[in-house]
Image (cartoon, rainbow, N blue to C red; front, side, top):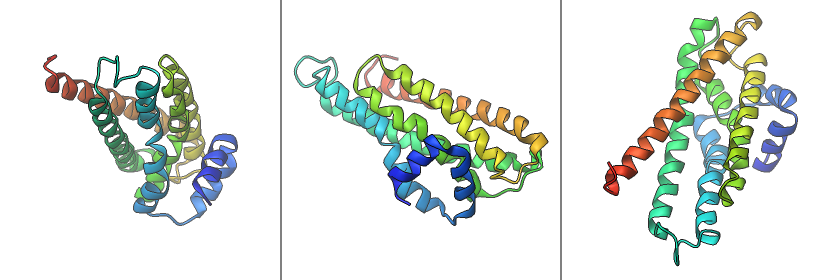
Length: 193
């Protein structure tokens, strides 16, 4: 299945798609190279494009293009790292919720549940539409729930809610830490700290 078909199926028919995803063989490298690395580039790429085309960074913007490109690359790398750490934590939490530890299944959950937020990254081209990305990410939480309910991690039905709740807290915590980390990096780099 190609990336466009998979993303479309995850977004439009997530319940059916999780069944297919669970059954298909996958590897961490395959999930990252054929899916995550491509889609995770959408938000920072469109944000960079928006800064260049709409805010006209090279001419009148407050950030030079090189700095905006560096920011996009750092955000991209940290986005991929966040997905991986999220999968690690989901995998480590598995026994707590009567689930089976399976890093590949945890990576599938982490990677595919990020699809709505990554795809909605196209809205970052226009400053002010970032809120649509947030709304899309909330839909990603629903897709994550369906993945747990499949059950991707062999979670008993009565423990899916708890596992999902803890996972949501973890993913929000990861994004808070990553955003804080980005702010500190760039504040130190540009003498704003």
